[in-house]
Structures are given as structure tokens and as C-alpha cells.
Image (cartoon, rainbow, N blue to C red; front, side, top):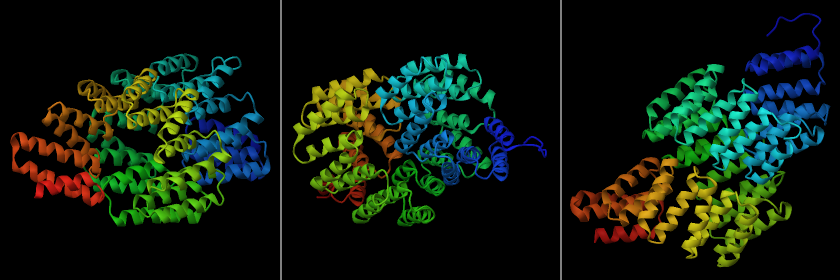
Length: 572
């Protein structure tokens, strides 16, 4: 920090803090903000900037307190509303972030940073048409804004339109040379397109600007993962943890890499540590659920969430994560109770009703689930996840035509939303309309040729239509785009079995088992593959392997009747 003198005013400290923040010197920037607050305790600007510093340091709860303090002193402080949006984004709560940004825009309609983040947040929420309209609207006032173009590129990338995104980012880099995030995003896009050479060139530009930055090194670890070089990825992540052990993202990525190497116990420890650092992040829980875990591990996860709730009893995402833990253990009553506790105070009750509806549907309580979705829609009639689930519950209730009609209407209104299109394609397949399902899936592929979801759905529909060779080609494309998608590998293995390629089927399904060792569908299909190979030539060892797999399936999912039938047939 610059040397202080007796004549520095609060504004001087805030200018210094801004400069330090731009340089990534967050601790020093925070110290400058603290000095400004000492001189002017009721300065909303000082508290808002301190909140930003804390958010950049991932001290999210402290950041929120500073930002709310700023609003206590000035309800029209744009920086405070903007900062709260950033805090919500860090907590993976894009809907809350949108509300804060819309308030900031009311106060500052032409603020470049606010407009840029609004474009991005619409993309995060899948509201791509609104993002595009806003981007077009602001071109007149901000025709060469690198920040707005950067966010629009992210929206394009979310739709799988990576070529367009790279062109947008390339133009933005001409307008502003010192914008490292542009190079980082281009690197990620090139990697997704399979051009790792160009990806590494862009990453090198980023590291040239900021050689010690963590984000590009995290991305480098991701590139190694994409190549299947998990050992090098682990070394990158371990280096990052030696520099800062309290980064939940690194613990999460390291856990994933260790899982790929088959080191499940160590991966589990990193997932649990990530959860301790970021208890509100649902992504961590989803990975923790896939790794082999004990009752002790789940008890520890619950303790982490309970402890976080004692400190902050009004964070509804903590209740949602706790509910998910209970549901994973089959403790549905307790899972429901946690959601209802959050509903008592949350401003996002419609999202909680959606969670509750899904939880009830998992238990086969379809009528009660429908009521939950409809309660949510009364307060947020345009909420897309609620509308999708409300449509799907009709199918569960024996009204597939009503469900298809509702999903088709949503697809017409939201032609770029892959959740809508994916569910429409799946339901068409379930109702025996394979050709229509393929058509919807191909529409997804055309719209986003580097997004694996469309190829997976097309491949699954082609398989069900007994067009196995076409299905195999499409599924191999999906697997190249996302090598870690287990459902794709299962369906690809089934195709190869249908084509008589039994050994290839075994290899694919064994790879799926390495990714998801406790997935009953993976284990069941691998058991079938072992039976096929044994029937061909291999003999008794493979049959014994199949028996062991079916027994394991029934341990994990006692109601898996197909596995029970195969086990009974082999043991008789």
C-alpha cells in the first residue's frame, strides 16, 4: 500500500483501494477500505468496496455483512447492490443475483459493469433470448465494451456456440488488451472444440499478463484432465493448495482428479474439505454422493452444514443441501422437514417448492408433488424449472399427452433452452415416438454442435429405434465431447453389445465403472456384458464376476428386479 500521510481523506483511501483491487492485492485493498471507514464510519462507498474485497477473497459471509451495512447507510448505493449480486453468484444463486442487478440497473441505467453482469446472469439462468436482446440494446451506448462483449461470449458458450463466442472475445481483446479473462475464456472454448494447441496459446497469454494467477492454473489442470493426464492435473491442484489451502474449488477439482485415478478415499477427504469451506455449494455434494462413502462421512457432512446453519440460520441453500443429504440416505421425512424450515423465511419459496416437488416425486407421491409445483407457480408463473417439472409430473400421473403439449409449448417459447428440449426429447422417446425424439435431439445438435447433450439424446433414441450403427457413431461423438458422462457410456456399451462387439462393450462399461463405481445401472450392464463374453469363450471367471456385480447392485438398490432375476438365473 502507498505510504500514508496525515492529509489523506477517505476518498484517497478508496482510490488507493480501487487501484490495489485492480492489481489483485486484496488484503491491502481491504486495509485501505478499513482506514476509510475509520475516518468516515457511515460511508456506504467504503463499506461497499470492503465488501467487494472480501468477496474476491472468498470471505463471502463477511462480504455480505459489509454490503448490507452499506445499504443501511445508503439504500441507493449502486456498488452495494452490485456487490450483493456478486456474493449471490459466489453462492451459486443466480436468481437472487438477478434481483440485485435489476435494482442496480434501476439506479444506474447505463452503468457498464451492471449491464455486462445482467447479460451474463440471463445466460446463467438459461434466459438466452433476454440476454441477446439486452446485448443488442446496449450496443448503441457501449459499442466497444470489452466487459459486455465478454459476458455475451459466455452466454454464447453456454449454448454451445463456441465458434461465435471466440469471435466475440477476439474482437473484445482488440478493444482492451489487458483483459486476461478474455484469453482464459478463449482457451476454455478452444479446449472444448478439441483444439488444445490454440487453447494453450491463449492460456499462455493469460499467464503472461498474470503469471501467479490461480484461475489459469486451475484451467491448466482442467486441460490435463481433458487429455486424461490425471497425474499432472493432481500436481497442479496440489501446488495451488500449497499456496492457499482454503480454496474450495481446488479441493473439488483435486477430488475429481483423484477419483479418475481410483483414489476414492483421498478424493472423499477433499470433497469433505471443500464442503467445509463452501457448505452452500450443491456441486460439491453431488460429487461427494458419487464417491464411495461411509455413514461417518455423511455424518460429518451433516455436522458441517449444521455448524454453518448455527452461524447463519437464514441461508436457505444450507437447508437445501442438508435436505439433499437426507434424501440421498432415503430419509425423506427429514429431507422434507429441512425444506419446509427454509420456506418459513426464504424469499425464494418457489425454488424450495420445486425442490419439494422433486423430493415427493422421487417417493412416487405424484399428486402431492404436483401441488408443490403449482404452489411455486402461483408466486412465479414464468419460472422455467417449475414449468418443466409441472409438465413432467403429468406424465407420471398417466397424462403423457398433456405433458408433451406443455413441453412443446415451452420449447416454442424457449427454443434455445436445453433443459426444455432435453426433457421433450426424453418424453417423446418414453411414449414411443422415437423419430420425433431424434428430431428434437438433432435440433439441439444443430444449435450447439459442441454440446454433448443433444448427441446423447439422439444416440439413445436411435438405439431404442434399433438403428445401432447410427447410434454408436452419435454416442461416440457425445463421449468425445464429454468423456466423463456415465449415461453416454452405458448406452454406447449397450449399442456395442447389440452389434456383437462384446469386448468393446466390456471396455466401455469398465470405463464407466471407473467413473461411477456405485452406479447400479453401470454395474448391472457390466454384469450382462460379462455374461456375454463368458458365453462366447471366457468361461467361469466372467460368470463369477457377473454374479458379484449383481449382488453389489442389490446391495445398492434392493428393488432392482432385473439384477435379482439375473442373479437367480445364474445361481440356479
